[in-house]
Length: 438
Image (cartoon, rainbow, N blue to C red; front, side):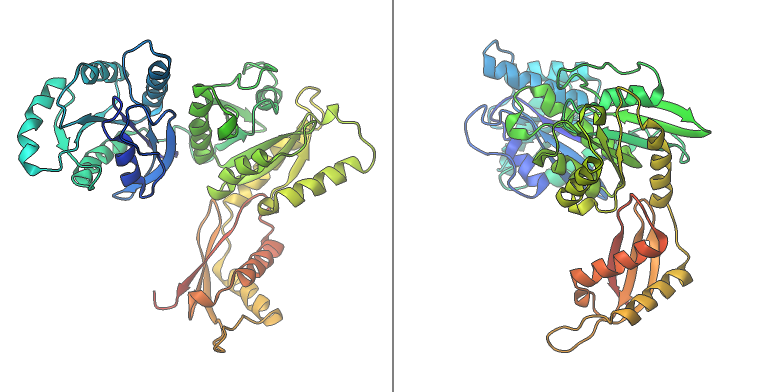
């Protein structure tokens, strides 16, 4: 299930970016005491009361034909459309303005849960002014101070109450959820159509044709699948159209909902830095990964071309050394028959659980072949017991005498031993160290 989304909206200069930074816990948004400084929505992650969520900082909403204000309003409306919960921020010192009332009307039309935060209420003596904000019809106003962090806990308590109302993923656990990610025009929509054998998604040579994430359920060889086709992700500095920025969050949410992520590359253009960043999202979320090299029909080839291209992928995507690579053409359907069996295989390894006694035998053998490291004081890492605590991705806990003695290189060595024994093709593995008495 994907993380819920909180959008912070309001007219310019009410302190949205300051509140955003407070919730995120770091200085992500630009903060300046001038209206309209936040031009584009900014995404980050927040957490409160065991809820992890996406948070969107928006430019202010204002009813105006001025180009900048119009663009900010448009972006905020897109954020409202994407959000599960909206935090409407007003300025307690200034009271209700005509622009606040206009924003309230937009929020009414959104049909989304709205929590009203009255910012800049640093002085408790100002709380009598709260009553006027009931006239907005949003509900109880929460007095807060973004600058000093006052009242944000109560505000977030109310926000996360609405997260529990979010619908669960409608698909059963046997359904393989897969998303296709990649920069625009690598052929993701064509690939969906090739898998389905019909024209279900609009296909165009114009980058960015697919704006939304589209769920497409289907069954093949008695296996149920859901394809989530996402809008292409572009490098932030080169994206000028607000809907492109909007699509990035949709792509991230699609990855969170997926079991298997197909990282689609364009064989004609080769690999660029943005491809690695996009693939990194899937790796960090712990999803199974298949690297798909599309448009292979358009490449002039000899008997070394595929091997050389595969080596280039391995050199560039070092963090995805576990991911299988398939070369195909969605246009000609060549080699398409290899894709779904590969997706099913990596999904099985993503959910594979290893018996504890067999796992411990593997670790003992690994330590025998390559003894555990010591620190500068001569203390040696001792692995007392190993168990698997989760799947999707497979996660293993080593109970040791001191977790700090588990060096990165030795952790990697143990991961390779586990992979060599159980394969785990297409899925990341997580190895955690815990002190024995924890």
